Image 1 (tube, rainbow, N blue to C red):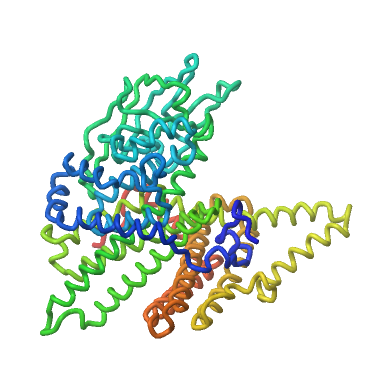
Image 2 (cartoon, rainbow, N blue to C red; image 1 turned 30 degrees about the horizontal axis):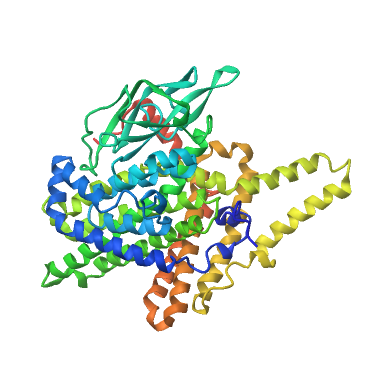
Length: 583
């Protein structure tokens, strides 16, 4: 039986194990929630489908009309994840992600406005709020009377949340908040802010810790800057938010004093299915646009849809979209299923889906040719909108380091135990030999696949047996690679970003591959091989893609150009320029 409080599918891969129960069967929503979801999706399309011309105009203007935001409120789109007892719809992560997907099929700025409110803006209140805090604010957040924003980023603190300079100091029983927050989505239209500030550690005046606070826009000293002029998602509201001697009573502390950093990470993790769902919606819209464009556009006397390279682009889009939806759905299923340690899996879903959307947007514009570059068509706007996703909610570069270092944590702990045992092996050779033998057996099992726990998937449809065998082989390679990387670099792995990047890419490929296998297996079991033939083709294509990528990254663990590349970069830093002009 899997311990839902600590089980992690990705961390187990690094140990040469496959926690099949976490992914199989592929997650589905409860019937009642599915029925309500269908009604909401119909309402979303009713509201947004006729507004394509408006979305283009609002993008040019860089602003969304207040009247339209009132319409979003009236459709209940700010209460999606708020429990019914507080006036919301009570959707779980899967249903919420599906709604964001549908909104994003129409416009990225609208999806961001709704998503920033629920995914991160008021998510902390939902996760960590006291009963009194929830009763006080959730009903107004559900109706949209209060729109929420998440205030963590500062001019000097983006990915490095520990560098936050906003402060909150005690004044009697109150707190006094001072600081500036940067690039806050919904910042200029929000009435509810989740704000992170440094607070002093009791008894140690020199140390500080991060604490979250609820701040409302009607408080004295709260203000915001002008709307930022952005490259993409231009109609969404983005501003600085300023806090000058804002006095907060103790009941505005959210989640406990000093627990802000850990809680901020939990908020970002739990909200990533919304961002992933938005990316899937964008991809589905682009596939629809690109296929129609390719069938209508003729070159050399025939539609470009008949050309092999155009088919390749569309086929790759389909595979990317299917894989992205699979991993986003699985992560939502883990959250809804009560699993608590899903941080790595959520990060993988964010990295994969945002990069898949970027590839899809770029190739859809390519299919459209010159039309794709014109503002009359939606492609150029989608490309601009899509770019921010690789920066949002943790940059993909930072998340890759997090994925790799967290993934190998259990391996590092075992190697440490072996190292400590070596020191005492002469004092207690029997005990020491026992520990070393256990680890030797484990590493031997990883290489040979002889132990039951290392057999990979056992419950997939028989038509997927070749892909399941490939997965099993690659799991052994992943575990062996994690062991080898740690033996090679030890504690220094934290600074070896080239190595961690490779391991992260391997883990991303493997987890998404597992999600695809689970989904295709469910389709085969439900519909049969004939009806699910196309999905089986997706599994085969994705399996080959993963095999090529994983093996390439494994080869480059020991043989690579890392030092040469770093040397060239250092030269460019010194020159602050490119150093060779052709004569």
